[in-house]
Image (cartoon, rainbow, N blue to C red):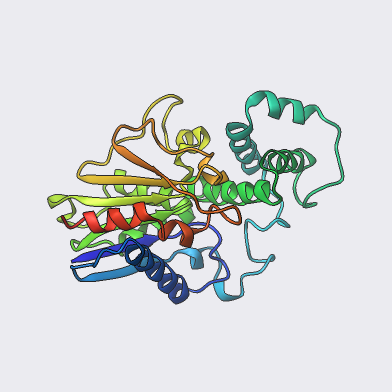
Length: 287
């Protein structure tokens, strides 16, 4: 029996639980089908859907409800976290230079001129618009999970409630990978979880950012804690800004798999889920 639990990340505010679950299950099965392997075991999928914890009516989530919308001003602490994420991506020298540059009339008015200049610089480097804004949204959602306990606890509870003794694979995208790792390393798993090997598949993960690792309690240059009994496969696209353009190769217990999700949206969850490394990790979990 292959039972997969999915943990989604950012960008699900306008999509309901059922639709996301159907899309994820379909993408995983498409990936298995594309490599021409017959799934010989029974297969089931469930989604740990937590976006509704951000708003009481996620189906009508709008700028006035979305806490990370471009029109919602950032607190000083949140803005500092966002700047640190850009520093990880652009380098300290570049960020210091941009900080001293004159203000320009550009970008979302709710954001500081400094953050807007960082967005513009990252877009220039990637030769594509909205890359910087995507990193801002990802950073703000990661910040909320890491520094707003009244949000983080219910999110972890929601995910933990989907895990049971039959769960063989956890597949997590974007912020979902931070949530899944945080939960698993904390041992928030059901009784009997450690009796057999499980598989964790992370896609488009921001766990490579030093800023995120520090917020999880890890000093710069140190490794993440291993997950005993868990086979960890990390899938990333070099053009995916949320991965900082790199995998988790510094962790000897993580298998990095580089993929090409195309130019349009390299951070797309469904594109990741259709890739061969995800399909093979799912198929290998029962062997």
